[in-house]
Length: 422
Image (tube, rainbow, N blue to C red; front, top):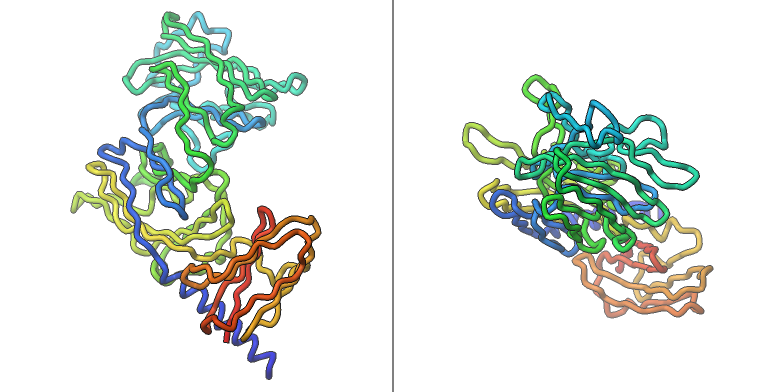
């Protein structure tokens, strides 16, 4: 009988925990500007992290040593074509007759890695990156393709990526007018941008751009080229305005749910899909000539700390202001592991009355932190634990009855447990 009571009590605690966070939603507003002139980098925890001009770059290079992704600013009108009449050796003899029939290349919106417009022609060969081929001896990616790129002002350039020195994370590329004039050879050292996803470059201004904030953003609101079905369900590329996920984050999406009360983020896996939030949380009503935001779509985003946030949109004003309105809230700080599931950590008693004791095996000999947090986010107590300690009692005698979160931080790891105080 006692065992059944405890199971029932834990169910009530879990339900109460989810319901409190479901109601703890805040409103926020993002402004992209008229014509969506800005990109806005956004953190679920901190809100807007940075606002930067959307059209000040043309191409961008992914900063990871083992990656060779190069993207284009498709949302700003950049068009990329692989030269069909020759390879990189045809640099001096480019002929763009019939260009209007060539296939345009855009980024793949669902992924960052190897999803760039320059990577579209990659084959199943693991060494082929679309614009060049990896040399397993030198570890360089050597360019083999010639590209024609249409810039935002409507002019065209020819461009080749000569090489990526993978070990040093350095790119070499060349671009010029179609007739060969104004040729420029550029070298970009990406090693100093290791905390950014991309190093951006403006071909029209001949300069590299550091646009991204440090790795504090969860997604970026921007204009990009996505794949959407037409009236006959044929897939085609189309300019969209929405949110693209940081590759180090995860998210999922639920439809036909109550936005205010739905909290079961765990019913679907969180995935690293770049356009998981994307742009389809709204649609344009041709009768009313205005945007309509769906009122039954909810997203959950796992941030870099492992905390899981709930998100849904409430308004989109369109190109006149670029204003996006949303509601968000912490859905669960247990995107990290529960203490009760970790063998080397134990807590007792729970439910508790006067005190609770936490024991752990500090196998790495590191300093730790122990916090007790209320359901409305208030920190009730927080202590730093020296590396020599392996047990801590927390006094609960002056704490009101209710549900609390016990959080143990061990380096970059975080363990949590729901505590019921009677």
